[in-house]
Every structure is written in structure tokens, then in C-alpha cells.
Image 1 (cartoon, rainbow, N blue to C red):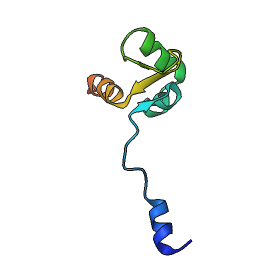
Image 2: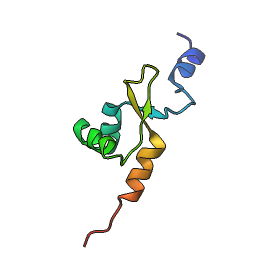
Image 3: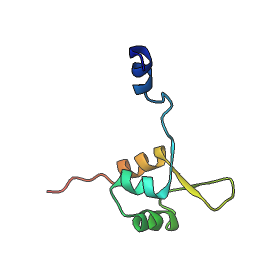
Length: 75
């Protein structure tokens, strides 16, 4: 592979991923998958349903909003 192709190969996709699976969202939030499911079931974080209606995805913006809303100072 030439230098130009090698450099181009290292360049990531400029489009950032917006929808995360429950597993990925758990990793992002630093929680277990069952904890993320609890947030979904309690309607704390909304979901996006996949094409078949069964697969659930979480919007990165909603995850970031959840983090912002749950920040607190502890003394």
C-alpha cells in the first residue's frame, strides 16, 4: 500500500455515529446493560426503534442530555 493510500486508510469516517445499541450506550454511560434498560423502561431516556420494531437504539444527544441533567456537586 502506498503512502497516500495508507494515510487515506487511517482517516476515519467524517460522519459521527448518532444511534447506539443498548450495549454501546451502556459502555458510553459507564453502566451495565440492565441499568440502561431500566432507564428506558422508566422513560428516563427515549429510544429509537429499528426497522423491525424490536431493535432499540439510543440517540447520542439523549445520552448527553441525561449526563448533563444528572451532574451534581458532592461535598
